[in-house]
Image (cartoon, rainbow, N blue to C red; front, side, top):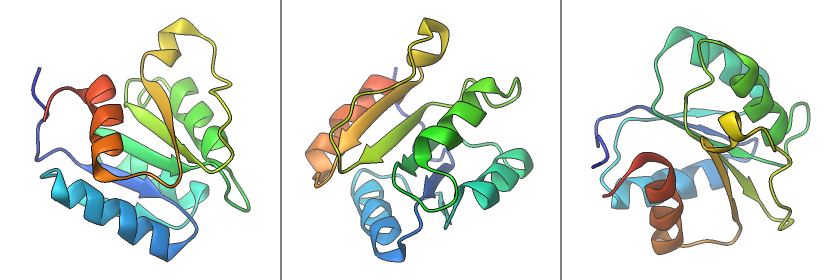
Length: 128
């Protein structure tokens, strides 16, 4: 399956610089419909207003970490099928063990480059 390069992507990170880095890497892969959120609460509101084909969330955010955001996505009947992945600098593995949810989830450790991002995205959403 090939990736729909027009799909909407949501980057959730409380650091503007990291959101811009991830956005630029996504652009290099051909994904241009990218929205950004500075935190989990705003991201959840955005997810309920617009259809997203992919969510990329930073694990280490102040009020709601990325894993918490992904847990909320996975437990929401309308959002649970959105492929999501966690950006972590801590190298920890997924704490999501439910197989019906785990197939929509992976993680990537910082720092990462466009090739690593492409590889992770390919496992979740298809070939570029």
